Length: 362
View 1 (cartoon, rainbow, N blue to C red):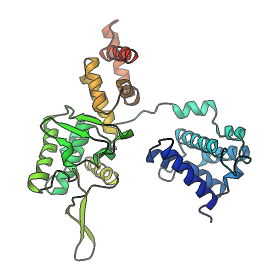
View 2: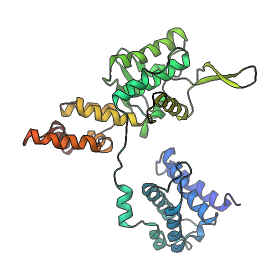
View 3: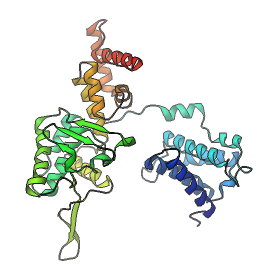
């Protein structure tokens, strides 16, 4: 079975260069667009993009509605279908101006890649994200073995994630020199750290407990004083593998090299949560934990703004809107508590109102 079309590959390469160099898209965004285009090619059995028309668009939408995700084994989410179709609309919108495609691709045919208004609303509907509580994370951390260098690293890795709320891609690219234990500060320099949108982010340790902070602090001291790693060494180095008598690969310790992807980090999280019979929560969900923790801790607009900025958000409203969804159980408790408050406005509402005013006047 054909796995690619040479003509398609050439024009896709041109498009991806355009996205990176001219449209300033990140590699992660381009990979998502690449996957969307490949879905269409797999459906058409790699026919030329010149064959695209309204009938193909309509049939492809039906194909997506019935397609099952490879990893989930479930029907594709409406949000996934929407992002796939939007990526294709942008691609064909660009392609129709290119030599050899101008007469083949019609602008009205591209519009047939639209979803219905009802489907779009369903795709954009906010989904409730389950995330770990501070108490659950503490249980995970303090149930982890911490005798070997590898075990110490794994425990410090999870402690550091809740201590800073940093994204996994940034964490695995950190070096010892980026940590200032005296100031309890992490310098996320975009020239050296994989920050989102290549932003400079100054992160200070969140107040999640001195015992959690001590685990990470002791880890940094262990790296420098016991393992004798220099300041340019990886903060969370990868596992060094070797072979035993049966020629099977076994962990031998730590290598002074960073992970190339966050997959190993996520696997450490998975095993740690499974060890205490808790569902697996990804490192990114720790950011949700910290946002909700911040809603309880912060009492002024300035405090919440600082909390938001510590997560790398330019606007505190981004923090609240993107991560601040209230789970149904807490929603019910808050509604019931309003009966005891009379006409008083709750603390977070007051903060949000002031933040909105600050945003409008800035």
